[in-house]
Length: 353
Image (tube, rainbow, N blue to C red):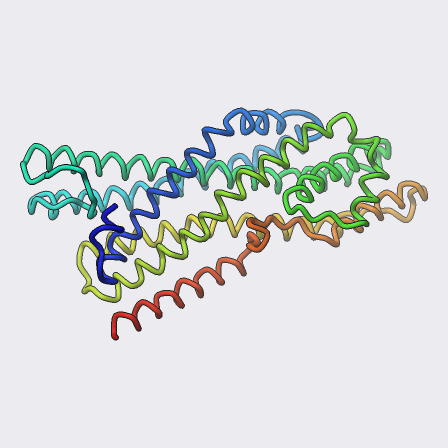
């Protein structure tokens, strides 16, 4: 409300914008997660069912390795967010609170000039920022965890393909596994070509019993998570632009250090989406090399044809997109930085005029 009612210059606008946007996107993430709690639970359970669950010690080691990476990344990301929030809150207590100023500008429907009302309002902001930080950590690490499990499934598929020479009967399971991974991405991107459709018909009898389950998975990722990631891209661009403008207009002080920490958190938040999306894309392309390294010349023609279809599918990489225009890769991260800087330059020119 303060952004709409009281702001009349770029300085005040950028001062309020970054926190208002962060609170808004946190509320949106929380709403999406709450509305789709049962679907997310189903997705987690699916990872422990065939063909996704590990079937031998080698596959179990792959799953444990990925789980360890997910836990490690979650811990590091949590420490980064917690450190930034703690520093900003602590410095606000030492400076703003003593001067009877709120940590962030805010419109409230009452006069908080009295000490008691000021303390209540200040504590409300304190708790709200902590809650927003917690929601961001929980949501971001959950989505990135699902992305890492897609990567894990490709590694498990590679492991199974290496055993075809000893037991060619498992090729049926490998085809079904690859089809399900690929199918989820086709639904995710909503971009099925004629070649892919023909492949689905060819292997339809292998996945018929699990068709509904994986449509649920694809629907969840496409209709729910893509909304969060797409909004996060837009909000991150605006916040980074706002923070750059504030940093350029002020001297180095405690507020600037806190703002730098907040900006680093926002960059990390969007970077992890792009990084894991990039890893999945690269891994899906490498699957063709794994198939080619198998001693396929000594196998039967039926097996060769099946392997050829798997390799043909890998020509189209697994690339996650949101809003039909933003791909989760490192190029998108660089584009976000360029867009933020362009918007920052525009604000500077407006300020100079």
